[in-house]
Length: 258
Image (cartoon, rainbow, N blue to C red; front, side):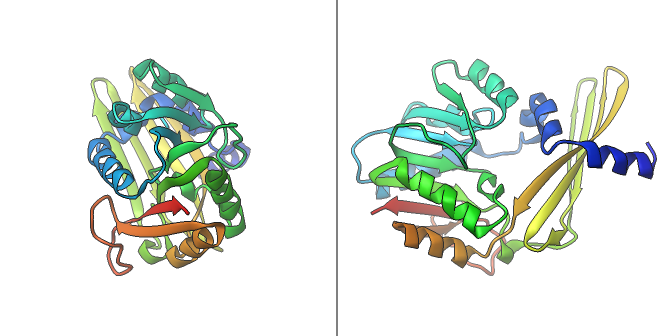
């Protein structure tokens, strides 16, 4: 494919269309994810901070159910995701869990939870602080008093590296897959165009997956949470240490509904 064809295809591609098309590759691309370790951290901080009495947990942007797998014995889980192909995989992996298709920016489940998690940079799918505040209010309204909201900022102003090349590669049997992107920031938004190169059954495929990802200052996000009515603690990654803006660790927010 030449450069002109590349940009013609990019202009015509609906946002995240390919993310759905390649949903069945998701677990292979992210096989390095420490779902077990992160779930252990979640259970620990929920036990420490939660004062509501139940165990109902809403897993927002649950994907294929990686965290739900390790949390299902400790919580009564509902998974929510905007991607029907992801949910189809999650339901096959975890048939005992309820999975619902929906957008975190619009969700109204008519149910309150003791814990809400939104992990693996999913919260970055907001491009303005006002949009982010709207979703935080929805989270707040879906939590019981004393409930816990837990999310991470995979991208934030403090850990941003302009121009960084990101490459994920997978080889499994006759499948060879590479996903390539480069970090470029425009007015606080990472226009992430992931290039997929796939060779499977002897055939080559080339696609582009577009994402709009917000990159925010961590203190500004904390201010919004406090304004809404959360008491917030920020950890450096999924460990017991407080977040340090000089480190490369992603901020992990543990916010309690007062």
